[in-house]
Image (cartoon, rainbow, N blue to C red):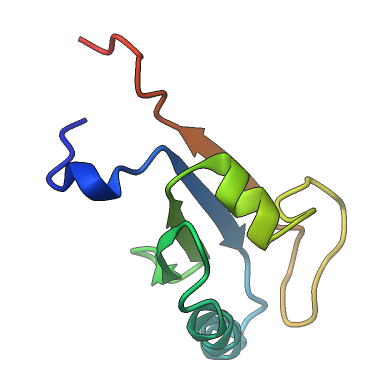
Amino acid sequence: MLSLDPERAVTYIFMAVHYPESGSRDDVYARMSAMAESMAGTPGLLEIGPWLDGDGERVVGLSRWESREAFEQAMPGSGVPNTLIHEGESRPREYFHLTNPPDADLG
């Protein structure tokens, strides 16, 4: 992966996939947008926000961090798989913890 700004290297991405109930997509998206705005200025957070998938069935929360440690400090306990179904959602969320180790030989 090519980093265009070596001063702001991303080594960790967290994704949370939400499955809104019929008619709740806009509410889920709005709650996720408000949460993202509240995180502005968090140490180690480079970017955060919700995205809609192409078919509109899912809302994906995506955050890019300088490190997993920064994520864990800012959001302790987040992204742990469970069976909880949140209000306005039809099934449990899926979580993805993606890393790009700086010394990895990906070539």
